[in-house]
Image 1 (cartoon, rainbow, N blue to C red):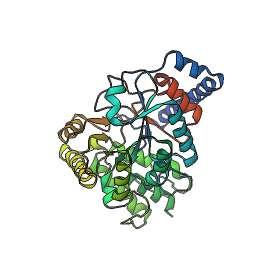
Image 2: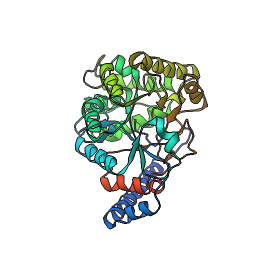
Image 3: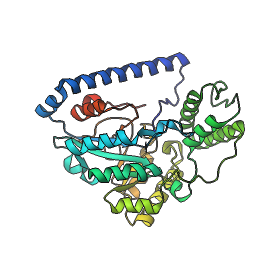
Image 4: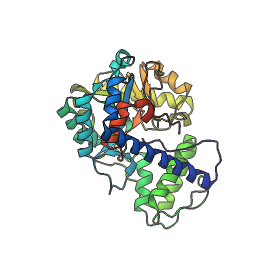
Length: 359
């Protein structure tokens, strides 16, 4: 899931947050302009040919398709089918696309090494992304939150978005978790973002209480089952047989660092057991839900090592190098606004265009 800027334990004025957001937008715009110049001038290819990068660019996707009218979290759509197809064609033509098992072998070599990953287990991964990957002959890794496969329902981030987009309530009071009431019908995107940021910053039990309050405030009945949102195990087994790697992403996608250690252990052990039972393959690879620097801790790592995980992936930017921590392997977010020039710049100059962002 996309990592929002949350600063647990830090108090900021609203104006400070707006200034950070504006600064981030300016930085992103400058990078996009630089990427376009590198592409159109041919300088990017020249630099990459003279001094090819070392390490691995790990691209992470969530959903593929058009989410512009979805009642759920629209930030989860990483690309539409056409854009994803173009991106995979570029990778197939210009890059060495690898699997997680290859990381140790290629991390110290120069060249354009790329790993493609997906988080959560949405159905469009199988229906849209998988056929495109097969057509281009590319492997990818799918990190599965097993609880949504076993019992298809809305995950907390999609439920929050769905409640805000479909409620008839003109005012939502989530104090003390949010400083002031929200007006969802006037600004649903802002309301969704504010609630998601608060949810991720809270201890798990407190976040659950806030979600219960939101349910009461918005008034809709919570659907017990949602069909057509998640893959099933037959589809996951088919992808595994087709050369895709299946990794773990917990059971219910909590922010692991917000859980006590015994609940972290249960999320990880149950996820590993379900993947082994359904695919016949151990869970050697894992992606942290949310994936920011504060979303996992030393206890999380110990739980992963105990079940035999060989490598775990974070999600706050960066370029994987030979010395990247085995349980904090960096990935770059693929977002709807990432164009072909942006992708080219990440491939040519990853240390500049795949910057570390601890938010």
